Each structure stands twice: as C-alpha cells, then as structure tokens.
Length: 114
Image 1 (spheres, helix red, strand yellow):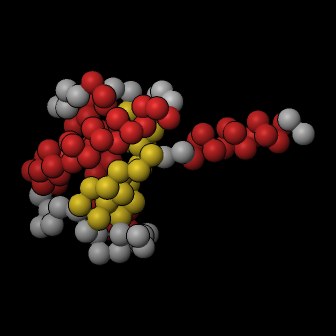
Image 2: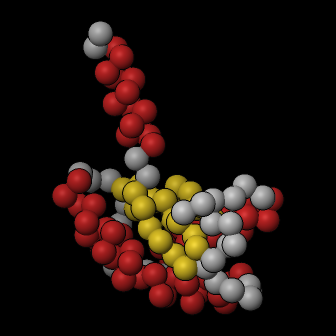
C-alpha cells in the first residue's frame, strides 16, 4: 500500500485513530479486544484505505484472535466512523499489529548482550 503524508491524510488518520480508540473503549463489548490499543493509522494515497496499527498485551498466541475480532468489528467501526466524521467516503479498514516498540526493545537488549 502506497501511503501519503499530506496534511489532510495526517489529519484524517489522527481522527480515525481517536475515534476507533474511543469506540473500542466505549462501545465494543468483545472480550478478545481487551488491552488492545490503537497506536496509529496510515492512509493510502487516495484516502480509500486506512491501515490501523494496534498493540496488545499477551503473546503471539493471542494475536490471531485479536486480529479476527478486529476484522469482525470492522463493519461496526466503519459505520460509526461514518456517523462521527461525516465524510463522503469512509475508508476501508485494514488491521495490522504494530511491533515497532517490541522490535526496539529486542534490538536494544541484543546490543547490550555484546
């Protein structure tokens, strides 16, 4: 997915991140989504696809059930985004685990072991 860094896309990504975060806290009752945090959103060039990055507690064994729960909730999230953001087109939501912090921790601990 080719992303963009225009001001409009950054603003939209921030709004989507805030709204999805609040929807997860307030409206979604799925126990698989407890301790899931939305860490960022990346928009593609035409603003039709939003890649939602998330972090979670638990190990890799929990990742597939969290991914499945997010994909199951995508329609609900998208329809609520439409009501809250009042956009002409609501982007398709795609979910990906954000491993940036984990990668940084493991990289730092690997350097200290030398």
